[in-house]
Image (tube, rainbow, N blue to C red; front, side, top):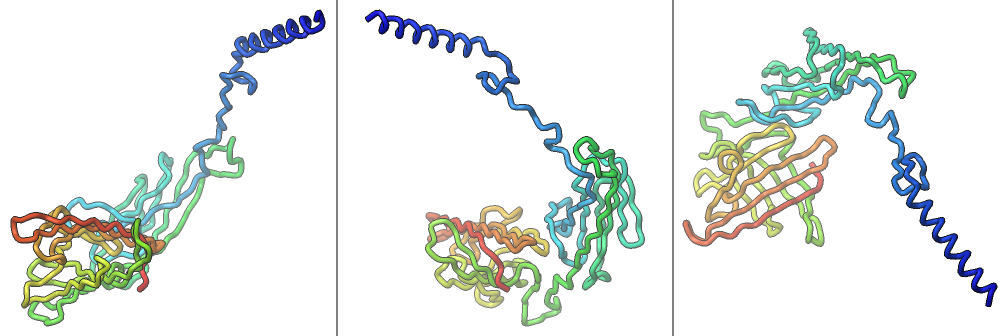
Length: 294
C-alpha cells in the first residue's frame, strides 16, 4: 500500500514538472516549445537575374486595349514586350534596328508590310545580383525571342464578295471541349464572317445538340458580333462583350474564347433567349475547357 502511494506521488510530481516545463518554454527558436517559429530562408523570393520577357498582343486594334501573351499575332497590331524582372539597373531592348533603353516594357505597332515575318526581339538586363543566394550570378543576362506576324486578318472584298468568311487563323477551327457534369467531350466548330452586324463569330455544336450558326445574309443572319479580338483571344456579344438577348440561339450569345500558346482552350459563353420578344428568358451558361484540334 505504501509503495502504491509513492507511485502516485511520483507520477503527480512528474506530470506537474512536465506541465511547468511546457508553460515555461518560451524560446521561439526551440522546436520543442509551443511558440516555436521556423526560421525563414533568406533566399525565399529571390531569383537569379534573368532577361526573360513576355510577348503580348493588344486585343483591340483601337483604344487602350488589353494585352494577351502570344507567340503569333495578327498583322497591323500593337505588340508589347514586357520584362519579367523588376527594378533592373539596365534594360536594353533590340527591336529590329531600334535600341530602346531604361524601360521595363516596349510597345510597337507592326503594319501590313511585316505580315508573314518572324521578328526577333532581344533584351539585355543588368541588376545587382543576390550573391549570397546565387554566388555564380554575375548580374547580367540576355535573351532573344522570335514571334510571328501572321497574314491574318483576311477579310472579304467589301465591294461584294459572296463569300463573307473572315479568316482569323488562330481562333477559327475545331475544338474538343468539355465542362463539369458532361460524360463525354464534344467537338465545337468556330468560324467568322461579315454580315450586317459587322464581323461575327459562328459556332457549330456549341450546345452539344448540333446547332449550326451560319452567315446568312438573306434569311435573318445568325452569329454574334465580335467586340474585340486578337490572334488567340476574342470577346463577343453586345458592346463590351455584355449581355445579348434574342429569340434565336445564334444571336443570343456573349462571352469569350481564349486559345493559349500551349493549346489550352477556355470558352465561356452565355445564351439568353426570349421565348418571344419581350417575354420570359432562358439563360444557359457554357463553361468549356479543352484543346484545339485544327
